[in-house]
Length: 200
Image: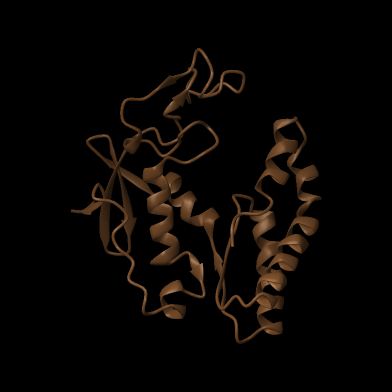
């Protein structure tokens, strides 16, 4: 299932509304997601992957709805993809060796090669985070980094392809899916996310 509701949260925030105002939309957004899942099941879906959002409040409501739907349809695996925590690890758990980002994972360390400033956008218009809401990436005055593969943030709103690969790896290989994707679909082989990701 694709992302539903992201812009419903983002747009009011961009208009200066408080996070509390956007939270008031949560129930309607999650109800819409639940209705969409029900429709997919009626159309014959056999397994449903449901991504969370970068909003904790939304994810709490969504997980309750998915638990309810799973009880109604025990024969259909409904997998919650914890996008929030899969993305958050890129910001909260890195260590640095020679100014390159490494992520700790159980007993090993994975070198991911991001630059040390994980909040800085690759494409933007100056300031400490290379972000100016008045000069977006595609507009005159914006500049783009030479190597997007060492950035987690593309334009202040979106992740880079390299960051998306690591997020996807965390979702597909664990531990950011409930139930675990590989337990539900054991016959699917998931390859390494990128040649740039390697262990020490």
